[in-house]
Amino acid sequence: LLKAVKQFMDIKYQESDINRYSEDDIRRHRLTNYATLIAILNMVGYGLLYIILDIQLFLPSIIFLYSCAVLAFLIIYINKSGHYNLSKVLASLLITLSMLITAVFLFEKETEFHVFLLLSAIIPLFLWSFKTRIWHFVFIPLNIVLYLLIGFNPPFFEAKIVLPEEYIKFFSATNIIACFGGAG
Image (cartoon, rainbow, N blue to C red):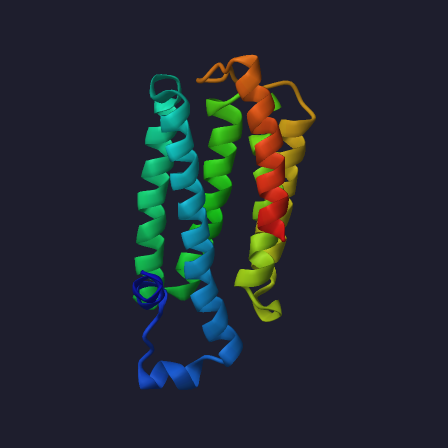
């Protein structure tokens, strides 16, 4: 299974491409696939957790997360087809937007889903080199500003999913732990 995943995630370069990209660029192209795969696993994992806890209550979130996971697979294919910068931008956007929608529209602020925006803020440091640092100045501040807006302001919208108190406490703790684990 690991061999199949590795083969799926690998990018095949033409001989002319190998000479065009540095080792660091090639590593970052591949890292884009792995960062996207981690996002997919996170989405699928939370979707499974929601199914186990209460499929009826979490149905809007399950549909949203699995839709985002399908889009993330498309990003991997875009990257494998040689559109490396586009896939990096799309991966960063998808991760940021999926966390934003989850934190603002789907769940109450107390569930701490917005803490994943801080994790999303460090992703550009790994995907883009210093020579393309413009993306650092786009995505890092964007994620931090979104985190601050959500974390320190009253909710902008009424949550689609209203959770019982025990779920709020559970998600608050697990989201913070998962975010710090992901950053590690």
